[in-house]
Image (cartoon, rainbow, N blue to C red; front, side, top):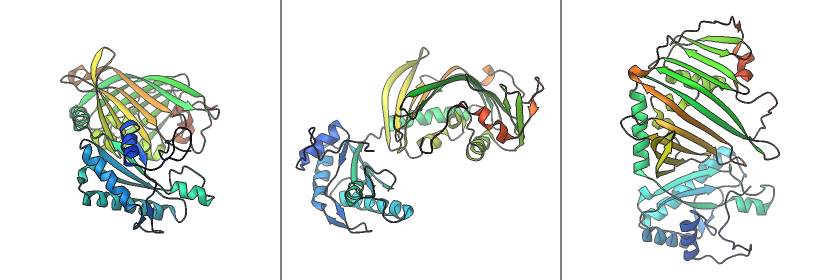
Length: 376
């Protein structure tokens, strides 16, 4: 499914003649241009035709010195996936080098090869494969201020030996009939670095509690009165990775709880914007927006000496309908203000011990009547 309108066509669908003005207008108004006309040698990064188009791209970038450009190269599905990924990256690097040779500073250019992963047409026909072999120019914003504010938040969070907060979350899912449905929950987080955390999450379909004391992880499904325990020694960072990668059960606000939150959040980011101020729960915040290949995320960071996250919104950009997860934080506390907790499981309700596999569906935010599709 096409993700963008191809600027090689007009509003009525008629083909338009390429021009430098059309390229400039596209990048100004839509922030993207499909650079038709570049032709590569088969399975190589050598340009066969269209090099003169890069003269126009360089000229436009010189006219607008504040612009940065992401060069996204796609292939069809001929050949292997890994080979196509490598080939597309080599072609993107070649285009970047050609623009640098034409006087564009290298730090204004991002070369991204995505291989065959984002087709706009069927690969079963020659016409479809030709459409899938394309080069997109995407104007990006690389705000140093946005990165600086996010890094300040991350450093502040990592420096807190103890912190706690309450949160409200909403997971929007897309049905097979393209209806967007919201599943809401609330909970609490109490963290003591380096190796203790206690979280709760309660909603219409889920009521769970997670405790970790540096030696034992306990997962409690309150709605079924069952629990499981796993012997595990390590830090909260290691726990987060283990839950996510091994069990598919991420903690609430997991990336924000890690000591390297900035690095985790910035993986794959190619666009960063500082949107100015906003207000969340009466707290003035900096509003920051970031883009990756598969998701957009926006985060609001509190002003003042405690730059904690007030709200986080993550939106899928590659799934139809743009499913979204949001987390809004309240009752933020740190240091001596954090309520006391020994992070030990008491089993006050005489819960039955079970295997983690038996509890996994109970710990999920999705109810039993939701069936997850292969692609969704």
